[in-house]
Image (cartoon, rainbow, N blue to C red):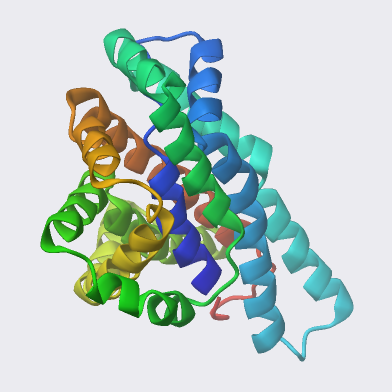
Length: 278
């Protein structure tokens, strides 16, 4: 679960890149996710989620027979399929993004600075440190931040919606699993049930926000340490531009919906008996 949360933040650092058309060509959407680094996230995230679920089920399912364990692993692999998640995100981007925003995004990601920032962000995807380790390793760097640079980093985090994305990964994965499991068991799973589940889980959002805010600042201070204040300010200006803002609105929704659907599918695929907890 930790790696999934970490990836939620890392994903949002890379997410800025896909504003396309009211009905842009799929080639344009593909180009944007490639230039922005989102393609790397879409390739990397499913495997990390799969590994996290396998680890969790292994820790809590020592009594499961081999055949049952194999069914669970197959369900995880099917639900969090990289090609299916990529197709889902691309479909939403091509349907909801605007041509003028796509042009602005392409201009940024083809610039030297845009390409360098994408490289810095995707390089962090392989970081296997725990959240606690990342915060500890960057404590001195964060404490030494001049006020102006800290403000720039906080604006970048806010504009990229990194913290919201991390919160949503946890909340919607939890809701999706439970909702899918209810469907699989033949239990009530209408809109009212979904609203009840969401209300019950949403109470954890403030605590998640505090934890991810600290982590996101540590990650950002580390990721962008090689950028000058002027370069960082240019990046923040891009993130806060109409194209940047719109992209993140759609980007958060695209990842949010995709991960919820995958968790719901997993809940339906898991070989659970009536009343058995996930």
